Every structure is written in C-alpha cells, then in structure tokens.
Image 1 (cartoon, rainbow, N blue to C red):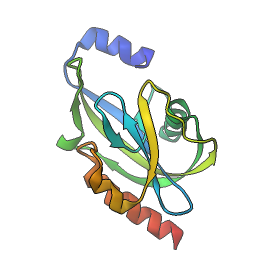
Image 2 (image 1 turned 135 degrees about the vertical axis):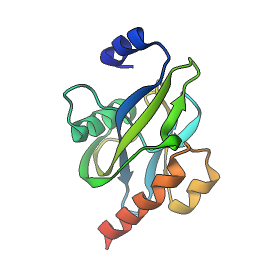
Image 3 (image 1 turned 90 degrees about the horizontal axis):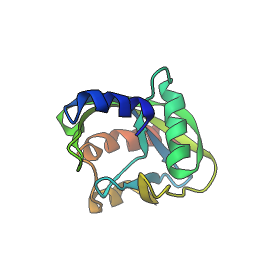
Image 4 (image 1 turned 60 degrees about the horizontal axis):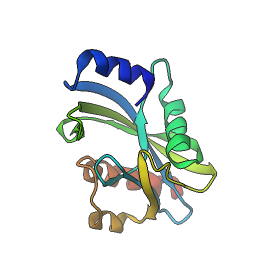
Length: 156
C-alpha cells in the first residue's frame, strides 16, 4: 500500500474507495499474455495497480510492472478503460475498493518476469484458450477478449 493510500485508509477506514488503476497486458512474440498470481486472493490477472497522485497512467503501469515483476515495458497503446460491479473488491482485511482500470498493451523491453513475493506469487505466459482453466478475477473474462483482439490487430 502506498503512503498516500495508507493516509486515505486511516481516515476512511474499510469503507468503499474508488480507485484509479492501471493494468499492463504484456505479450510475447508468440501472442501469449503475461499473467500474475496475486497474493491477496490467489487469483490470476494481468499485473497492475493503483495510480499515485500526480502520476501519469502510462508511468504508473511501467512502475507497477517494474515493482511487481522486475521487468521494464514499453507501452504500445491504450486498450480500454473499464469499471463496473465486476471491478469491486473486498479484501481479507475488510477494505473495499471499486477499481476503474486503464488497460494498456505493452511490450517487454528488458528483464525476466520475477514475482516480488509480496503482491505477486507467480507469473506465467498464457494463450487465450488457457485462461478458462485458471482462477481469475471477476473482471478478467470481461476484459481479456478485447485484450487478445487488440493484440491480434497489432500483430497483423
């Protein structure tokens, strides 16, 4: 949790917080997507996180992927901005967040995806047809078809 978010939570408590966030959809040359197993709920999703005050969303996605997986990425484009009831989360500590996520398509520039063992427990490259076999966040099935469609359009 960032120092800013810790201050907000100290005032707000566990009540619902609207959270601007980003997600980095990194593809390899084979069209596989990098997914991360998140430690807070044991669910797979593309890596990302909250946007800090005065931070540009593209900078936030690069920072999050560097912090969580030790990789540097180039942001190739905005895939879309998503929100709604599927993006609401209640954490084990009782904190509730409603995320609005800017999803970016990214390319790996350097590094090997290595989980930070804090927020991320595992990382793997997956094909679109492998997603259904993984326990994912409630928003992943809504967003990933558009993510893979974006990748196919970029690759052609």
